Length: 482
Image (cartoon, rainbow, N blue to C red; front, side, top):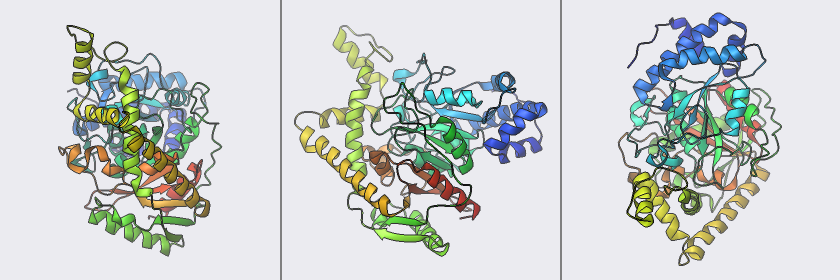
């Protein structure tokens, strides 16, 4: 433990209440503010780490000095995110920090390159504070870890945060975070912590530099406490990457302030039939639907017969992709290495000790499903179901501006509860989120905060390349104190 300077409450208040754009303006024009900002960053990050254990690696007591050095080099240029602090999921590569991915397999791995999105943020002047804790290889929300540490929720310390990145934003330590959303983890953690999350359309943000397990589902996304910060960061990193085959053309992105283009909203008529849906979430969501109707939005309850099969299809596909994607971690090509009397024993020991229990079970499940005996019966059927779900959503979004559901069927689980307590490989927490990943569509989690209870989220799924519309409705609802 180390000591840090005491700074004025005024600086804390300024730091907490400035948007990313406003913060960048202050940092550029005011050298005295930079000094105070560096001290505030040290105190906030230190306090958040002590309270919630959110960093897997960071600058520690050197963060204030590092901030001043980095910003002084860039202060003369016109950068939209100058001096704005952020963190990365530990599954996103950066030259500054290790990329352990929450796994003993990569505990000492330092990538020789950084993610394209991280390079773009650096060019925009943003300051990377560190790497945040994740579930092993980003497999679901962080509830248990083979490395032992689980991040507490700033909204309720007895509950999980879902990810260190979400806790960092919710605690006010940073302005935004970059994370990976494969089955809905990014939005789920945002729901648990009461912040905004944007999972863009597939390919909108380059995937180069992500260490994931399911390349057809995973997408880099953004966490922030303000919808305007989502917009600003997305504008900077939604750029085509010529070295990423899945990257799409640079997005034309221009949200129109607080005016929402979205007026017609679809709601799955059987949204309340999810078995794991808690009464509290059910009641709040029903109340919010009534509020939206009173505000003049047109809500229709529609049939989406395959929507709630998404977690089953997604878990099958993700498991098969994980079996393939994680095959290289064998002690020869990548990862830690355990000694053995012969090659087979070395492989066995390395993978047994390098992967945690949940990842090992998931890989074994993927191996089973992709075997000749079950390939046609399960994997092929899951692919067909994915196509049906995507067609259903695209047809829905031809008629409606967006689809609205809860983000997660429950509020943040208690710390210490095992992942298997609520479905294990079935991704029960992804009952509403998985479909957007299968279809490659953008989705935004809007926070619902209420006094004396844990936060929850509302999920808006939009049209392909419809990020601006989603951010606009989020800004409009926030302005209306929805």
